[in-house]
Amino acid sequence: MIIRNRLGMTEAAETMLAQQNRMDQVANNIANVDTAGFKREKVTFWEMLYQASDNQMRVGKGLKPVTDQSGGPVKMTGNPLDVAIQGEGFFKVQSPDGVRYTRAGNFLLNEQGQLVMPGGNLVLGDGGAIVLGEGQVSIGRDGTIAQKGVAVGQLAVVTFEDTAALAREGTNLFRLQEGAGGEAQPLEFEVKQGYVEQSNVQSILEMTAMIDLSRDYESQQKAMRTLDDIDAMATQRVGKLTG
Image (cartoon, rainbow, N blue to C red; front, side, top):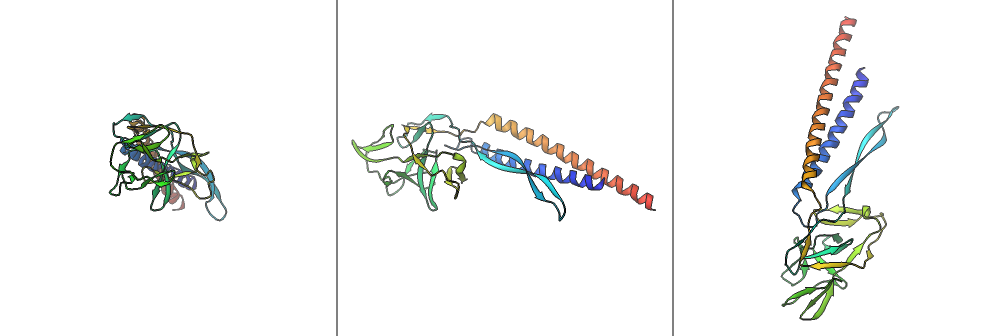
């Protein structure tokens, strides 16, 4: 009985750890409900076989983070440097660690007149970094950027056969995982100037998930206390029999 109870304790502890990780994920989603272009994270649960001891194998619980790449609502800002992608696709940006991808189109100009993300990463066009001078900026539906009627570049927007090949890096950046395949592909896209895509987090759903997780966590705590009490009773009875 003690061995079985210990297995039950292990199962409960694994479940609580999974719920805690999921709770951290939900909290991060809620914290970024107002972050432009943010994509909510969720998890999938699967079971895996692993070595419990020299002679035993057992099934444990696994968690796999998954990014929800569905589009968020588009908000009009009136800022000429804000751009929202209509449909699928990702902006290409240059980070210190290489090319990255994002849906966040709330762009700025740095001191060199380069189009950048709020964190300073360069927004890439068909010819590399996009440099703007003085004057009104217009961005066409095909991503062509013009000033004073002269085209100065075109936004680089790409897609992927399988977005699961993208790994989250920071809040709004994604990188293509090594060996995952599915290289970035050019895309016929359409953008809207003066608009920005908002987070796809639905705060009500996330709050509901947080309440459910909290209740489930408490249930597992009660189960562990019950199993611990059973172990204590079994130990006392064995002691009486051997005495």
